[in-house]
Length: 241
Image (cartoon, rainbow, N blue to C red; front, side, top):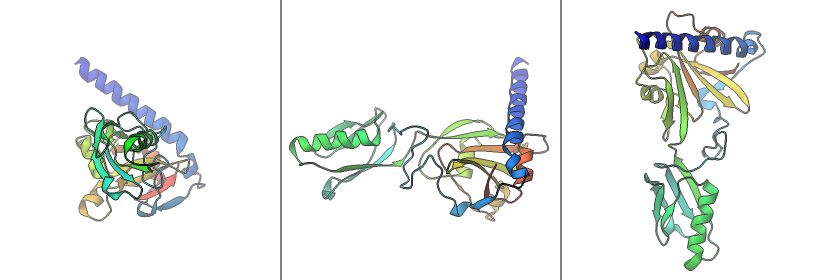
């Protein structure tokens, strides 16, 4: 009984927060001053991801366990490797041996590997490290999903795959009302997607990036998403809100 009451209070609190957010942030859309930026397939990556595909997030990214790294040494192709950071935060490289990568920035790791190579093998080596798959990226899932929360994004992840991490949607979910919030070029944006269309193959399953927020509307309920769903009626378009 106590658990049920707590869950009910938590749900009501979430709805009130979403309502407040939607009311304050959808004014530009409702006033007609906002505009559709582009189709999802043409939309640039969010501010948390660089043009090279490297994740930056709110602060400088630090390598974590299970990250997949591409390491290359300029003009020494035989030393190039793709390695995954183990659970202890370590990687193993030829001529270098075991290196502690966990907790270091990409620049720090490049400098560390270059220093070890220059000790006995190479003169002024130029080392590049690219994080191919991240386990420290996070996506937030809220609303009518079975397990709302913050989940890791490893490699390329679609909207359906992200929702699957939250064990799918509930029986009350509005499958035509899935909103993805993203920051692009300093602007907070939102796009509405239909899971029905995606599953039927009538719409593309969009890629999800680190720091995206996915909110699944509740069918028949007066949730705060209603304002946004009403002001962005065209699926798959990102709009300023």
